[in-house]
Length: 136
Image (cartoon, rainbow, N blue to C red):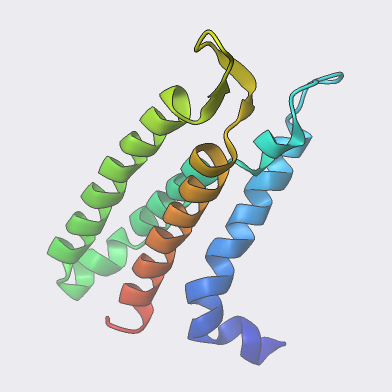
């Protein structure tokens, strides 16, 4: 088990996927009693995963300062922050199913509200982990 947890492949792919699952469980635990919103909404964790990636990047700041790779750190931090705002905009205005009158419902759109944001945020987190661990 130690070999798996210490492998770079686990840190590149496993850690982001674990954070996605943690986000899903946090959404499920954060529901109000009697909440009738579909459980599909619990799987919408793209923005949360991007916040986690931003936290991972910020945690690497001391290493970037001492390692002399501050420009790479600044690029990742700025890029992920920019994508985070795009994700927030999508989450607010485009990720909800709409009724016949164009009014958002209480259900996330499967593709624009769950699958694409989650996939995109995981790809960004994995790319950061890869750049940090494989191409330091």
